[in-house]
Amino acid sequence: MRLKSLRSIAGALALCALAAPLAAETIEELDALSDRTQDEALGIQLAQEHASRGEFLDALAALERVLAEHPKSHPARLLHAVYLCKVDDQLGAAVEFDKLKRKKYSDAQWADAMAQCGFQQGDAR
Image (cartoon, rainbow, N blue to C red; front, side, top):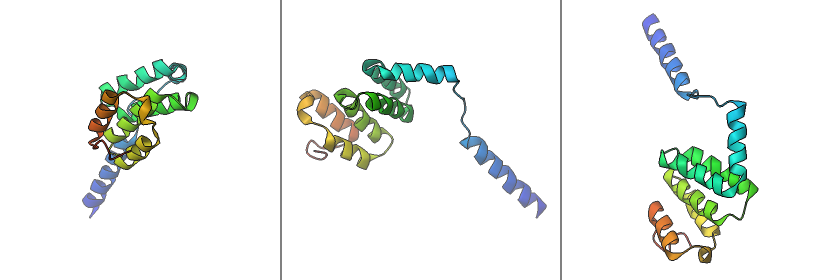
C-alpha cells in the first residue's frame, strides 16, 4: 500500500513538472516583445518566426498584441485565423474568417489561407 502511495505522489509531481514553464521570460525580454509587437510589420514578422518553429500559441499571442494596437490589420487578422487552425480551433478560425473582408486579400492569399485550414472556398465565408 505504501509503495502505491509513493507512486501516486511521484506521478503527481511529474505532472506538476510538466505543467511548469520551461523558461521564464525576464522583464527585459517582455519589454522587447511588447515593443516589437507595437509595430504592425515587426509584430507580424515575430508571429511568423514563432509559427515557423511550430510555436503557434506564441504566434497567436504576438498577433493578438498586434491586433490590440492595430485592430484593422488585415494581414494580422488573416494570419490569426490561419494560426487558430494550426492549434485545432477550427470553429474559432471559421468565426475569424467570417469576420474578414474577402476583398482585402488577393485570390491567392485567400485560397492559401483556406487551404491551410482545410476549408473549401465557400466554407468560412
